[in-house]
Length: 348
Image (cartoon, rainbow, N blue to C red; front, side, top):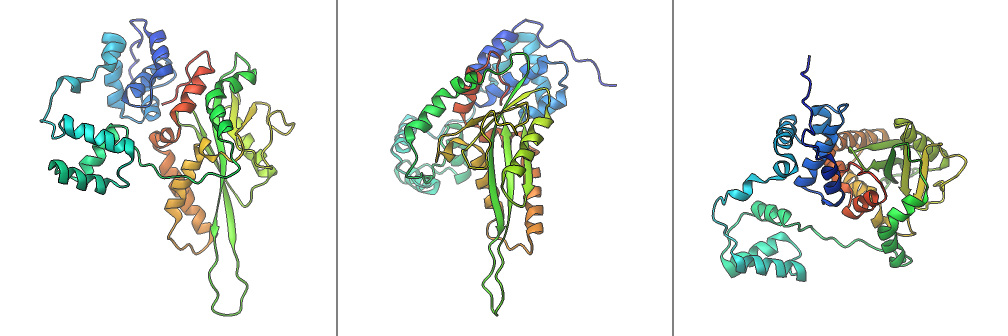
């Protein structure tokens, strides 16, 4: 029989944890704060908290012990700050050149950067070490994304800045939990092969409906043979039935078969927010589809069934690690979601 967990908030700093979560960006500090906030609820055991934040049970236990003894200050203390470690091969001059080069977009690839650092400063870091340094510095690979000529950039910017206002305008019930999702669909299929004899060339297609929720790495998927209102209604019900006591707010694009907010065929606990036209970059699920397509490309599938099996296998591997789900959600969406709520949405 598992031992009873000691009270976590012995120092009464739960309000401070909630306040810090509202403004803390994604990263190790936010993961610790979120773990403690989840730990305040006795219904969440250590395994559940560990799965939600993507860390080992033993790590979460250490965080809890630190918080019990010293509160938020002890929880967020970084022991590495007091350990100088090995001398840094990046002196001030190198760091300044690196920062300026990144701002100017001087390099298109890390190997180009690696060659310049070796030529100009004699830096002999391995590529893996340089990637690690760039990640810690917050640098990201920037690949241009096509933008439709009909997109209104001002509308896209306004949606980012006023999402909290749109959420508040829904007048959601104050006594029911609210779950915020982003939703989209992806087509997959067999493009057919050039025939070597007279025959009918066949193309086969299928579709994946996907939704990613903010908080505890929620996700829902549905494989179907087509995209239409009937299948989408089924997917709406699937999301709503997953947590019947909650109100589910779905952010989606304005496709013709998507139901608008207030439609009679929507489940009672599902509300809708529609993205501005031609703005796929506002939907984080698009990033998931990019990764899924990478896993399907340059492979020959004997049938659509075999391809679907591959999709299901990839998605199962992907959703088994909450960090994959968390990586999709941009900071602006987290900030706006929390700004619209009287309580912090426990997101990553």
